[in-house]
Length: 322
Image (tube, rainbow, N blue to C red; front, side, top):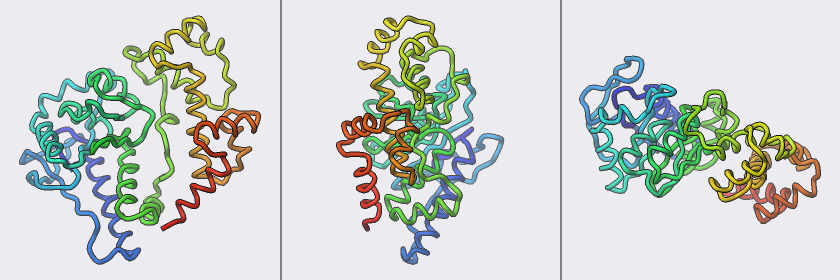
């Protein structure tokens, strides 16, 4: 964990504690006497005061397999990059680790430090939904996917806000110790290990009024209303423009139509429900906004290459395999 002035101490400790817990679970599951994870809090500084005035014990930078960069205290409406100049030692350390081929991870708005280190250019990335537009504007070379919880691209991983640190840690535990250890760790810690998206948490009223493209607004509007019937005139009326203007501007920004996005979002939601619940496919097609099961099944098959029932069976068979 890379500690720095103003970082969220809870994100430093949260990653450390859940990895420690995962190590105990792995050993209890027959993983051997040696803990699979060793965590250390490092810094290029001798003394670090985190957010809230909490002093952190740190050691000098050292060789690691993964460098995790926590987020810092963000203020809505302020340019998060304004304080980056004060963190040049950390930014240089992040760049140096990446240059040596070490995996780098950011939690929440820690993605801005990765951006300053030049690690987001040409990569997919995410951050807290509240600051995703700002991240995209600051680092136009990055493909910011604001709906995702954890995004990994060529050795660089970024996560959504705060609690997404747990999604990252559970992914890390699963990758190194297996699904059983990750799931048991989540159960012991009372953590939801089946989250798929930031979308359910987005509050349009908190989003900045500027720098928020029409297509992004339309997507958030549709994502939060997957059950509703698609109504283009009503959608255009909500944004106070004509249907023709809506379609034209949306296509200019995304290359597709709002309906294509809605169908894709519905299919992702259906995929998640098939994987994580025992609901019938008919219950699921209603949950994601389709009144006709045949229409839903046809779209799902076109999107994923298999019918919904076959997808669920294949997923469970893979999960059950060692």
